[in-house]
Length: 95
Image (cartoon, rainbow, N blue to C red; front, top):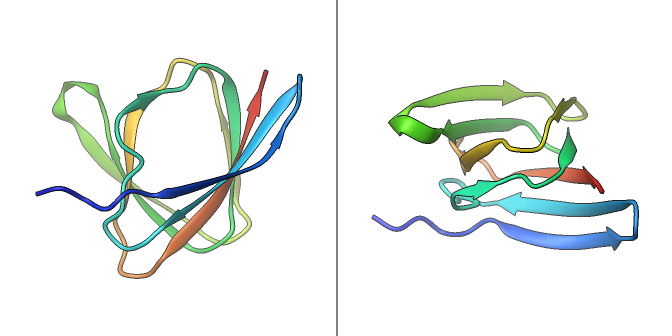
């Protein structure tokens, strides 16, 4: 079963940072990707993220609106909206 795709909207792209908003309908995914830069996520809505990870593992994490977290480059995953409502977050990549 093919999932709908999350909708990225690039907001800023300078020599130091790239800022992208991601909007997900329920069940939408980013698709498998590897982060080439360190990054920070700030949630705009409640987010129930199903994180599909290498090796066939997955886990679900939940964030309230306005929460943030940082990750190092090299993370590989597919992010899926595992909730029943649309979700959105902003990703800031550090170049």
